[in-house]
Length: 436
Image 1: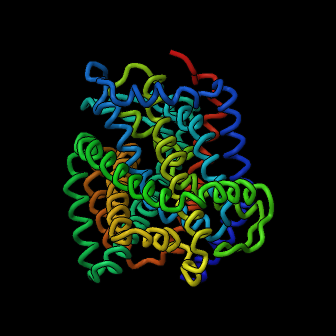
Image 2: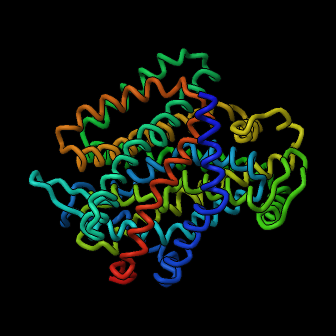
């Protein structure tokens, strides 16, 4: 296992220390200018997300599609991902995460627009779309579509499954001493009960779970920022300065270079919002909408909430706490910086633990749908049952994997998913409209 981990690390260093950062930033910037700063329409996207769309064609509401996307993205990337980014890339990584979110909104809009534009209706009335359909019907490349689906399947077992179950087990073991195999079994059972109903069941659960868990977590973060108010402005200054200048070791922070800050910031930002990977388009394609423009705006708001808001506020909590209590993080692991910060408030460990469990469970539910759609494309609906069984088994065994191995593998799969999806966006950008 150590040898495999070492190989994956070497590949990630090659990909994420240059090529993937350039590809993503170039795509984000290109689409931002090409779509005339579509980010400025975020307010409209938020308003449309709660507007009824029952008279349009589709399987779930716009809000249901949005919360399914958020369920898949509002996971441990917003908590542990930000923590590891700061630990490995320094405070400057937070700004790169935030910039990945702001600029990535345009990419999310583009991939969702194309996904809906090229979506197909099955004989049973179900709607299917996403990068695989864009690749097949837009670029007329069936091989790339098949490749993307296999990568999505791999990601569903890794990014969407193993990382989440591993985190749930870690929290429940530390807080309550529960045996991992019991936690894995219960988590798999709960997830199975939800996903067996398909997108309608997933959408119904997500519309209730996602807003509740988001408000709960943000309220706790706001309390922490109020307690650290005197260190908030210094934290912002440090984040900005460290993003563009090499930083020496300061207090509880390790020293870092600009490349290191950008590498971990962009990689963790992508892991969190998935802008450029294309999964948001899979959920968006099931929405009840007759207008790709409107639903693409709604789906764009997922990146805003996930990275610009949630990751941003988590980063400020971590950095302001370290500046206030630098000694508190000595000896803390990369994934424990957020935990240490939350211990500042009563029952903070339990609040964070419950947030991680809720976020991870939601991600398990959301990603199961992405993988299921890849299975339908590859093998037809008859493959769904086998996929669901394998997915639930991976939830159970995911807890025993090394967290470092899971994160590195997730970065590698993300990189490979980006290539065909971004290729389709660049070649079909003329099909993307920024007005109704």
